[in-house]
Image (cartoon, rainbow, N blue to C red; front, top):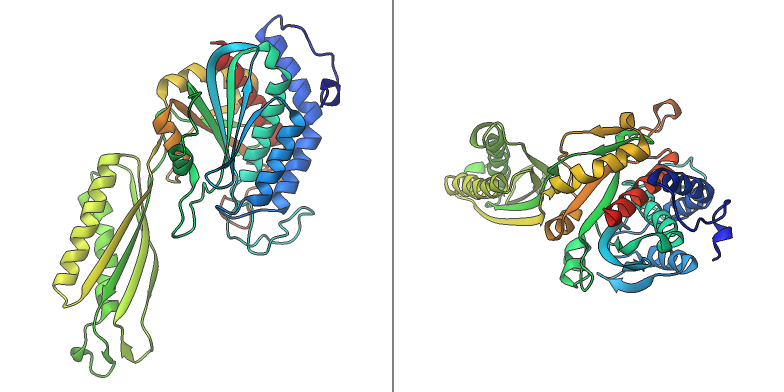
Amino acid sequence: MPDDAVTTSTHPRSFDSVKHRDRYVADLVAHLEPRLIATRRELHQHPELSNREVRTSRLLLHRLREIGGFELRTNVAHHGIVATLHGRQPGRVVGIRADMDALPIDEPPGLPFASTVPGVMHACGHDVHMTVALGTAEVLARLRQHFCGTVRFFFQPAEEGPPPGEVGGAKLMLDEGVLEPQRPDAMFALHCYPPLAAGQLGYNEGVMMSSCDRFTITVQGRMAHGAYPHRGVDAIVVASTIVMMLQTIRSRMIDAQQPMVLTVGRMQGGRRYNIVADEVVLEGTVRAFDETVRAETEHLIHQIVSNAVAGSGASCDIRYERLVPPLVNDRALVEQMLPTLRRVAGDERVIEHAPRMGAEDFAYFARAVPAMFYSLGVSNHTAGIDGDIHTPRFAVDEVCIAAGVRAMSALALDFLAA
């Protein structure tokens, strides 16, 4: 695709200053914005669940080939893509990651580009993340004669977690060796964040998001007629005791200054109103910022459940899965790149916020290389766009797309030039 198809101004031979380059990028992004919005809407209409991102992958490949200039690796971690762009000379390597999958949520009617897939919705903004990455890819491809080094785009499936019995996500990408042979010196990723208005950017130095673990506790009792409970072992009573005791981990067993959340989200058991239940299944999650607290909580869960069961005559099975570690931003990298965000977005629009108890498997990338994960504001309260992620009301003010592309492009270019 020729440059005159994507920009209204003559492509400069060189930039006199960073300010000149920023202005050129802003003009280019403004010209691309209608097409980027159309791309986001197409992705939004055709969401796909984790490890099922077949159509999504095809669309991304089509767009990348239209732009041109990328070395493409496909079928990474099932349906992922790695697109590598080289500047005019060798130099540093920067990585940009965007997640691809959607959620099992019904989208309410109303939007002209609402999901066409029943029960599936881009309710976490991954359609925006992919669009920002594509926009950044196009900007940098047009400027590849103006920077030294390499930019690698990682389009990642299954951020929301692979289906039971499958593997996927960031961990599988890393296991398949995507960082080599051109290992990034730094990686960047963003995430839609409804508490911030569209155009605002949020950051945090150090811990950005919590770990995420899942536990499943199966309590086995002994069935009996409800009229004669003494002849059985009531799994519901034992499970109820466990639920209440688990809450004392947060309130009485973990340092009060250490953030941690333990939630039992599912309790299922019993066969009939007048039968003592012989089995109850509990499922829940543990979130923590600190690996020591994470490990301590896992140990305490096993201890509490075992003690509760031992005194009841029941038995139990405990499965504890460590899903995602805490996402920790590299402090030096954040300090280095904050001036970039402030320059591009404006000081008043770059906001430091507290770590979040949500989890993100970009944490695996951040463990492997210095990384910066930041927030992209998407809300517009005046327009009624203020729904939270992972809910049917989630929506974005699409002006956030251009803001994201400007920020991500500047981060990549400034890092390569540092």
